[in-house]
Image (cartoon, rainbow, N blue to C red; front, side, top):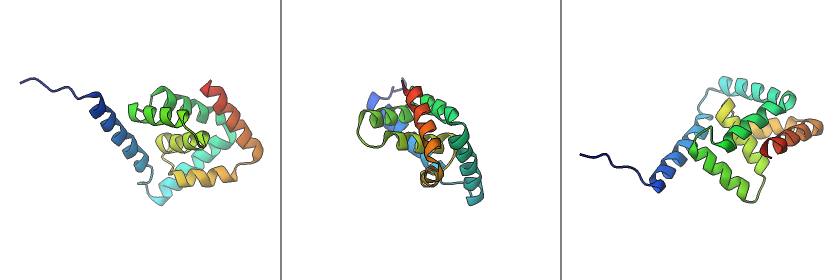
Amino acid sequence: MATRIPTQAEYEHREAVEFHRQLKDAEKGTLSERRHAAMQFAEHLAHDPALVAERIGWLVDGNYGYGAYKAAERVLAGRGNKEAWLVQTIGALEWQVPPRMTVQIWKKLSPAQREKLHKAIVKELR
């Protein structure tokens, strides 16, 4: 009996489901774990934006899976706040920080820190 090869649509669906599972995993930690992860991510956003931008580059290159890659591709091709989506997504995938906590962290960044992060992301995406 031959093994059936999934169609491209089935593969993409399976990968999209896996990507959404990864995002939901960021919500599953205890409050203490999520706060600790948020503190670490906040430090990187504020003081090492190049690292965050590098991870965003990894996301766009497909290193977090095909589902994440395709989602990033759709976001970058569309309208809306691409940078916010990229930062929230990489926060969830790499640091296990829920998106709502990433928004809270973002609001605490100084304008100079936001600008450094923005420049690092733009440089990485070129």
